[in-house]
Image (cartoon, rainbow, N blue to C red; front, side, top):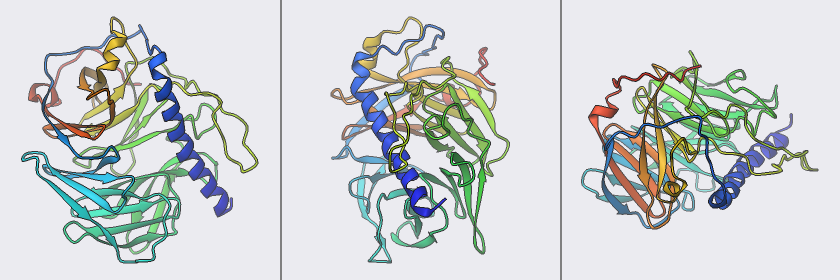
Length: 364
């Protein structure tokens, strides 16, 4: 398949995925996301909010962590980082710079994994890397592999999602840099139900200790956990019962771009990992849950992926009618990006020490 066609597919997949989420959001107030087939457990105070911090803009996203420092990238100012000291609440604005002043790019994303930071554009494609503190980004990978999602695993490996030139479907893989670059794809990890692109849409996640990689499907009740070498995969069901994605895909247009005929049902909206815990944001209501609660807070379900169990759920509360657009966990902190606010919570050790006993098993 030609480079232009690959690029069309990558751009089309990314833009249409974002469009689908926006459409569903606009219709969410008129939909009742109810499934009486499961019941959540809400223990008292598993997380406690410590403060909200005004970060000025709603375009920030989580770029990475460095102990108590949280780094936020900015989708509208791609060469800007905001560093937040979660303990003191101090903020530092950082300007990153490419060594190549004439760099051309379409869609930049920043990731921070100490001691490095990465600036990536999978549609060009290239990856820049620099050292934290210096903030000068040098070419690390150029024109080696297209991708539409990527997160660094360590200094020489990145976890990616791309479109396989062999199957024409989404696949997970690893970019490895030793003496040269090596791309390893596994086309068997993502289970196709319809088209192999929209139906397997989801997000890459990684545990803070770097031991585990994960993939959360958006439209079905499953997430995948792998080790840091992308081996020993394990699928685990969430407490929701939607196993088949409810998606309608139209025929490709004259530019070979595929479109959705109707908004899909989002089962899992976002996810995060920390150690043995996999956290999933869902606005699907279980038994005895009030729809009015979705106007006040987002629901986070907590799973132990090593035991294959559902543990408990908790709320992240909205701010001035702004809902949670992204959340993350690292050690004693759970954070949420809500409008132009950063909400910071402390985790309860009794719930997040990953030794909680439970009776309900959700593994496949």
